[in-house]
Length: 111
Image 1 (cartoon, rainbow, N blue to C red):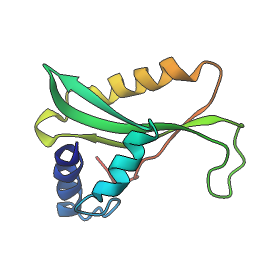
Image 2 (cartoon, rainbow, N blue to C red):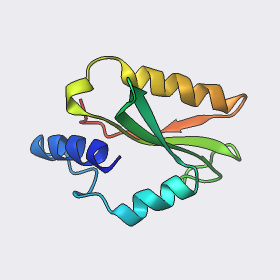
Image 3 (cartoon, helix red, strand yellow):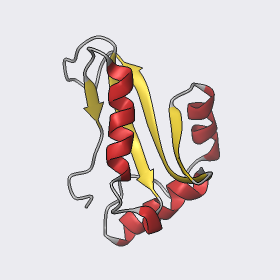
Image 4 (tube, rainbow, N blue to C red):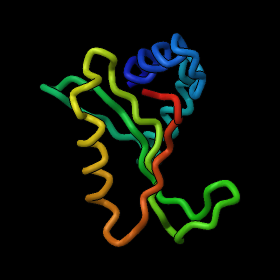
C-alpha cells in the first residue's frame, strides 16, 4: 500500500503539487488500516489504488450533515491512471452512503 501512495505522491510533486508528504508515514497508514478507514483497489490480485473513507461530524469550519462520509487520499499507481478507476472508487463510496452526504477531498490543480 505504501508504494501505491508513494509513487503517485512523487508524480504530483514533480508537477509542483505538494498535497501529500513524501515518503508516507508508515504509522499513519497502519493507523488508518487499523481504524478501518483505508481501502485498496485490486486488479488481478494486485493493489493498484488506495483511498480512505470514514464518517465525520465536522470539516474544518464548515457546517456539514452529522455523520457524513469523507472520501480522501485517492491514489492510483501512475501506470493505471486514466482508466476510470477513480469512478469505481466513487461508486464504492456511494454504496456505503445511503442517505448521507459524501465529501470528496481533492486538490484543484491535480489533473
